[in-house]
Image (tube, rainbow, N blue to C red; front, side, top):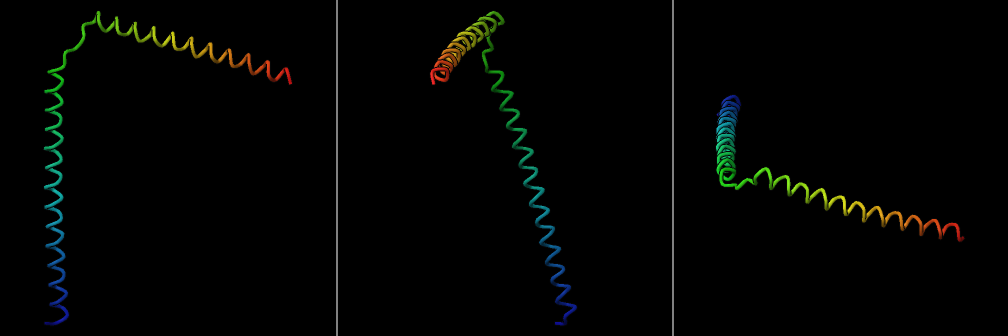
Amino acid sequence: MSVAEREEVKAEKAAEKTKKQKREKNKREKRERRSFMRVMREVGGELKKVRWPTFAKTLSHTGVVLGVVVVFSLVVFGIDQGLTQLYRLLVQGL
């Protein structure tokens, strides 16, 4: 077998390997697309099963959340003001 023939065989093997890699890549991409579409269908199915709250309940729950946020904000503000006053007393006392 001559050098040229060996090079030709190597080139053929490389071309076959490249083709095989492309086929495998295409298969993977198709699987991923199918998988994505399946996930989207499942998400749609799950969203149909959800019991959505009424508008009145949504407003009620929003009011509760805002109320809790206001209360905790006041608590944190009070703690901050108290610690600020304590710090001022300590600094002025030194």
